[in-house]
Length: 86
Image 1 (tube, one colour):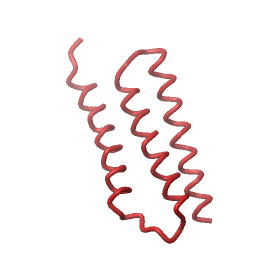
Image 2: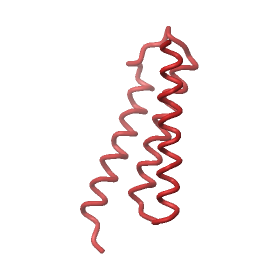
Image 3: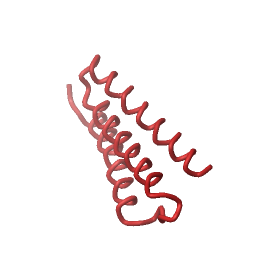
Image 4: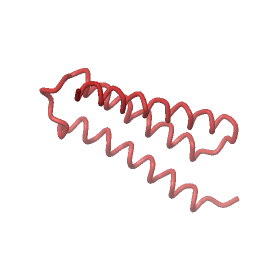
């Protein structure tokens, strides 16, 4: 059941990344590129975690760093959107 849920979360993140890319294509706003990259990183992170299997720990350095990068991208997107002029 855990692998199924990880697959669903990975698929949901991939769909969100594709939607943000579509929003970027119509608006050309960097905000959507940052969000698309963050969700793509999270989708790959969850897929790799599911591929390795239930024996792996979710708190290994690689998984934590991938999440940190994804959340940092979201924070950068928000800060960039709120401080950009024009």
